[in-house]
Length: 226
Image 1 (cartoon, rainbow, N blue to C red):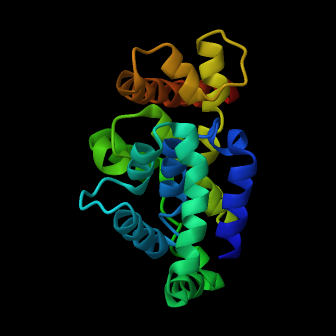
Image 2 (image 1 turned 180 degrees about the vertical axis):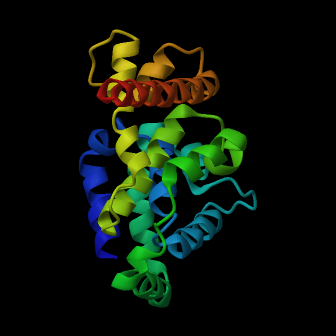
């Protein structure tokens, strides 16, 4: 639990650094990416606990339940930490121990994060955004990718060629829109879109354009060498 406890405390203390703002929805998307590899059983148990605590039989995700009760993204964000701490105190230690043992072994690091997040996750989101993100949202995609990338770094998995290539997308977006800002690529695209839905689909068009531009540069460089 050390990594998870440390991460949650850092997010609570500085949500802007991880999530851009204190938002329960941003937090859920970030953790969905991070928890693809760690402590999944723990948060499945947390989901059931939230439903029991709030006495509801409906099954939206834990962030939506907390948001409904609290009424605002900010209040729900800070309420999450209180609820999660209460959950850990009440829950059987065996569930927490199982999560620790399952993901503490070094040999796990080379197996559970070897997939290519940009080929597999992005292709899946493009085809079925609701299944991967809960809704068609460029912000949720950004948060999920941040969480997954962090989990891979913590596991010591070296970045793939596609991950390194994606790092240049931020500066490319800024150049394309001729804008100098510290805002993330998702916020820039969202600013020039009608809503989250349109921004998500615009992202895939722009990302394909970015990849094609890189290929063109590679061809030009190889031609000039000849």
